[in-house]
Length: 264
Image (cartoon, rainbow, N blue to C red; front, side, top):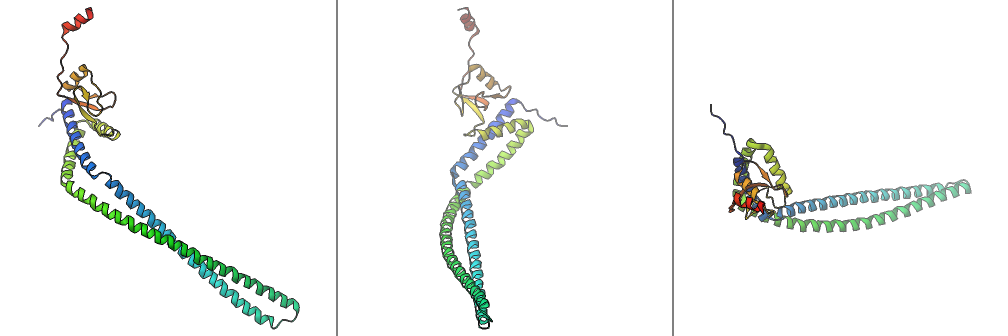
C-alpha cells in the first residue's frame, strides 16, 4: 500500500506561486480585452431599457386610440339621442315637456363638444407619442450598431486568445485542486486576498529587500525565515503571502560584532 506524500510548507508555497503566475497570465488576457466586456454589457442593458420605453409608448398609443374610439362612440350616442329628442319635441303636450326635452338636447350637444375636444387632444397626444417612439427607434438602431461593432471586436480578441486562455484555465483547475488537497483554508485565503487587492498579487517574492506589490522593506531576520520556508509568512501590512526571496543575499551579523556592540 502506497503512503501519501506529506506536503511541506515549501511545497505549498511553490504551488501557490504557480497559481499566482497562472492568474497573472489570465489577468493579462483580460486586460487585452480592456473595458469591452463591460461596454458590451452596458449597451445591451441600454438597448433593453430603450425597448422597454418604446413598448410603453406603443401601449400608451393603443390606450389613446381606445379612448378616441370611446369618445367617437359617445358622440354617436349623443347624436342618436338628439334625433330621438327632436322627434319627441314634435309631440309634446305642454311647454314643460318641451323645455325638459330642450334641456336634454343641450346636454347632449355639450357631451358632443366635450367628446370631440377629447378626440382632438387624443390625436395630438398620439402624434407626440409617435414622435417619441421614432426618436427611441433611432436610438435603438444607433446603439444596436455600436453593440454589433463592439461585439465583433470583442469576439475577435477572445478568438485570438481563446486557445491560451483555455489552456491556462485547465492548468489552473489542476493546480487549485492540488492546493485544496494540501490546505483548503490557505486556498480560500488566497482567493479572498486576490479579490481585495487591486493588482491581484496575493503571493509574492521579496526582491531587493522589499515585497512585490507593496514595496514594503522586509527586515533581514524575516528574510531568513522566508528563505527557510518552514512556515507561511504574511506581510503584516498587506496580508500578502511572502513565498520566497529572489536575488537577495542574507548574511547574519557575526556574533562577535554583536557582542562588541553591546559592550559599547
